[in-house]
Image (cartoon, rainbow, N blue to C red; front, side, top):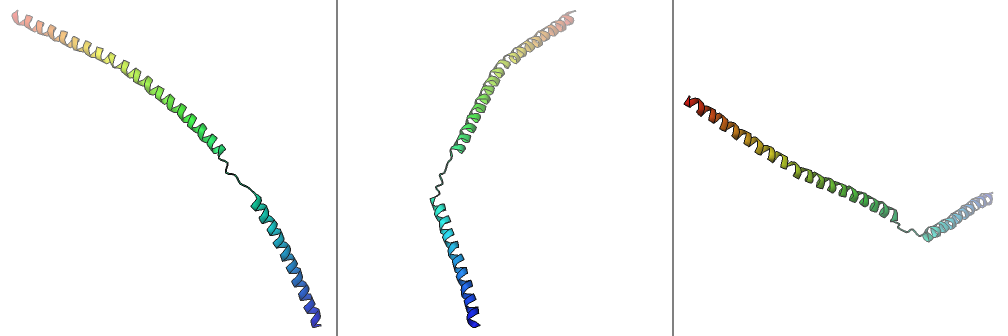
Length: 110
């Protein structure tokens, strides 16, 4: 009777060892598969996106530069008109003062 239980325990242990050995063999195969995998760092996609971004930013920068040049040209033209207007206004003031002075002197002699 004692031998029967001992035989059952031995059989269970041998089954467990066989299962363990099979698991180890399967793990070794998986490890070999993982070791054989070569992973290459491919940054071509990122480089392409970066080049595209830099190209777009360069275009935006050029457009902005052109807008600044156009604005500078317009501002340089707009300074001419106020100078002329200022001289005309000073001339009108001077003529008005001369006329007022003439009228005052003319009234004083009458």
